[in-house]
Image 1: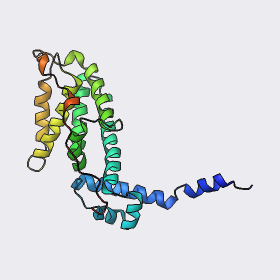
Image 2 (image 1 turned 180 degrees about the horizontal axis):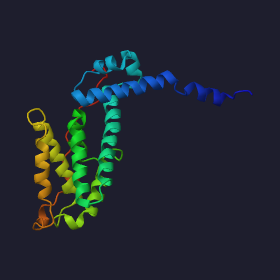
Image 3 (image 1 turned 135 degrees about the vertical axis):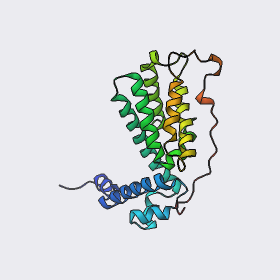
Image 4 (image 1 turned 30 degrees about the vertical axis):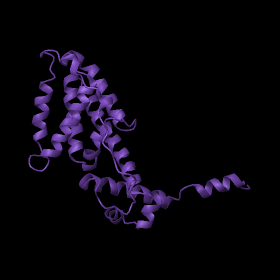
Length: 221
């Protein structure tokens, strides 16, 4: 059967198997390196671990920002989904809340790049990342309404996660499990048997200022 011009063009545009494999290898290597070293890593290290040349890396990701954005979107989404699954497995609403924070902060503690960018993402939720995490927190808040201190909102719970994330960063090297103690103290402060929170100091995430970021960086690091 004759191949039409459009079919031929479509086949020429389809990525080759080795190109797809190279891209997946780069993303996997970048995920590991960013988790270990954060976003300041030199992409030559990513190319080395990927066992591809810099030219191949450039073809897939023209700038370092392109690569970091791709990896963070994937890893952030997986992190949020893991935390959601942990909460879903718990039948008791309070246990679900504890399991969510435990899983989220454990994953957070093992991924430096997510640490660095989590707070930056708060003002502008990514529907594939923080936006999904926010939905999970909203569900947990509704589910645990009877066990939460009156006045506690989903924004309170999200900001608590951000705050504890900073505690993970601060204590990561000297006392890596200190955040677990702080988590228990914080969650105890959310218990329903405490007085209602003042209504005039409820958080408004939409007004949290976004930190400025530098423009795209060439992938050479």
